[in-house]
Length: 115
Image 1 (tube, rainbow, N blue to C red):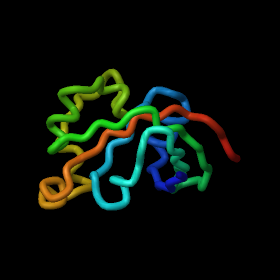
Image 2 (image 1 turned 45 degrees about the vertical axis):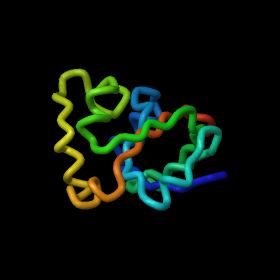
Image 3 (image 1 turned 90 degrees about the horizontal axis):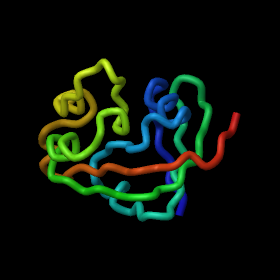
């Protein structure tokens, strides 16, 4: 199955260059349909460039605190010099939605590039 997701420019480029290998999302109705072996087409919201990635693993957690404790900060999108803070995800998702759905770490491998 193929899924489509939008990404901010910085996250998109980190996936494209292979440093970010885990995309973090709510485990809502849409994301709960994802299984290993599916394809995700990411669209850069700034440039409209797309990348197709293969889902290689899925990690389900109650909240972002758990996810951050179990994964390398580079793989989830931070730079080496940055402090990885799960509260950063509150800019995207409310505490209520995190409690309702839980969170999902989607491990991916870049397969195809479209320009």
